[in-house]
Each structure stands twice: as structure tokens, then as C-alpha cells.
Length: 407
Image (cartoon, rainbow, N blue to C red; front, side, top):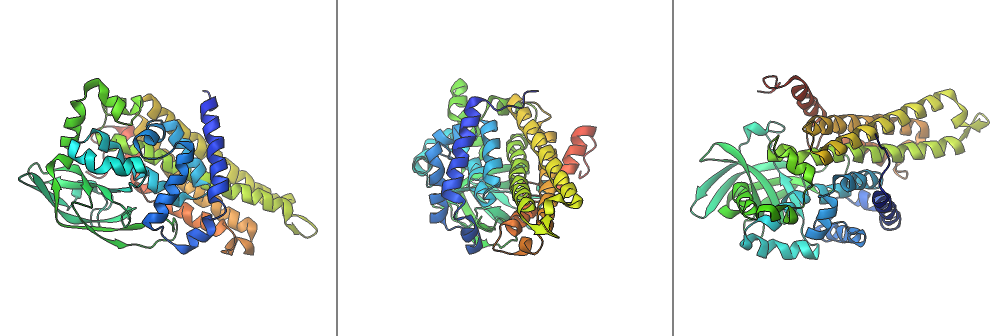
């Protein structure tokens, strides 16, 4: 197995690290303490990444979303500096990627926002009652002439309070099955309420309320994909997805295939957090003196650093193995991405816990980034599927049909 990045991937990583160091490292702690980004601040943050060709606009998303390895590097590096930025891209990309293959009316409204970098999207599936049980959604969509009428609520949705476009899950009343809609706030308004959390403090998170929300029927997922298939072979030129993703669509549902990359990305973002905490701990262990010598000479400190390093490296290997399976279109991508998310998130929690122990009292100070690393790491075990749900998915994929633990 080749563990080396290509020259292009190495160059991208160096450019990204340079951008993060110059633009974000100096402001992250102050901005994180301030709380959720405003819409204007979020757009400004996203615009900075356009300097290295990264965005959710059609050109930038072809590199970020259409290339799983680039997305993986992006997730790890940004995770190590400011994980709160990741939902702007990871969740925002989900509705954005379907805009270029939607109807002319949808494109006329949304493409200008995408191209100008002023598009902020969200993925709205989780509900107050359903949670991880997406088979029990309460949000309904009733066809009424040329529109669907959506009623229901969503919760713990990243970008909810600043998004202009949402990818909303609902039960189609005519079929009784789950489908998705591109809901544009400008023509199909919804209400939001901000939610506060222990980590990812700069990432806006909220509830969403849909009350008789009228959405054009052409914005429904089936209609969008019908438009996409009309393009024939040209669809791949317009839809910013990899060849591997197209292969995954032949073995699993579109949403299941869609979630493999974000879950592997969450695992690698956790690696970024863990690596930042490990690096800080190594530096501190070299410099901090107790009993007349650096604490790095103490056996217990060295053992903690060993455990932190093994957890970080193992999570990194599993994360990139999951990404490699997505690149190849291997059906095992579902299992591997679920495992990468669980292991990465739980490894980051353990690594950041030890990092605080190594720093002692200084680790508890909000003047140091250690407490932020710990809070952000704790978040990683829940969004995009809790660790427990990811373990059930892993068990099901290992055992096969008929062994689902929740049906």
C-alpha cells in the first residue's frame, strides 16, 4: 500500500497549511470565544479559501467534493486549526452539488450565489423525535399542484441560522417514502432558532421550523435527478462527484453513498484536533520543568505521549483507508467510513484529555487552546451519526442482510 500523497496533493496541503497559518491561526481563539459566525463572517471565511481554489462554487467544488483525497486533506488540516469552519463546506456542499443539475429555474436563482461565493447551505434531516432514526421522520411533504407543502421541524442542523438553501428530508405523503428537497429560503421561507453547544462554538447550529412551506415540485430530489439523467454522459461533467461515488450509487442508496465522505472527513478532522493537541503536549513536555528537569523525562509523561501518538496515527490510517475505498468505489466504504468516524472521534477525546493532563493547570486555562481542542473533540462523536449508530452500521455491514439492529 502506498502511503505517500501525490505531488499535487502535497502542494495542496502546503498551500492550505500556509493559508491556515496566515489567515486563521491568529484569530481562531478570539473568534471562537465570540460565538457563532454571522452570515457575513461565514462568507468572508469561505472567500479566503478561494485563494487556493477551494469552495462550494462549481469550480471549487469539483476539486473539494469531486476529489475525495483533497477533501480528506482539507478536513484533517482545517480540523487541526478550526473545526468550526468545516460545516460551511461539508454540509453546505450537499445542496450546492445538486444545483448545476437542477431545473433552469433553480439554476437561475442559485447559480449566481454559488459563483459569487455567497451561497450557504445546510443538510436538514435530524428531527427532535427521530434523531438517528431517519426511518421515523415526522416532516411531511404533500404535493399540491406545482408545489409540495412541507410541514415539520429539524434540530441540531449546522448552518441552519445563516443558510439560504437547505437540503431537507421529508416523507412524501403520496408514497410514504423519504425524499429530499432543495428548499430556497428566499422563495420558501422557514424559521430558525439558535442552539448553543460546548464545542464548535463558531459554527452556527440551530432548529428549523417549516410551516406550510411551499416548495416547487422541481426542487424534489427525484425531479432533480431526472433532470440530471437527461444530460446523459455529460452529467459527470456537471455533477461534482468522483468516479468512485458513481460506483457507490450502484451498491447503496444515494444518501448512504453521500454520507460516506463526510463521515470519513469527520474522522480525519478528529485526527487534526488530536495532532494539534499532541504537538502542543510534545512542546510543553520539552519546556516545562518540575523537580529540576523537563517533565518529558518522566516515564508517565512518555507513556501518555506514546498512547496519544498511537491513537492519532491509527485514526489517520483508518481515515485515509476509508477515503481510499471511496476513491475506488468500494462498497466497503460504508463500513470503513463509519469505523473511521467512531475511532477518530473517540481517539481525539482521549488524546485531548491526556493533553490537558500533561499541561496541568495551564491545560484548564481558556487562554490556552487545549480546552478548545477538548471541547471540539467531544463534539466529533455525535454529528453525522453518533458513535453508537456508526457501530450498528458496522455490525450490519459485517453480518449482512437481516441483521439490522434497529429494524
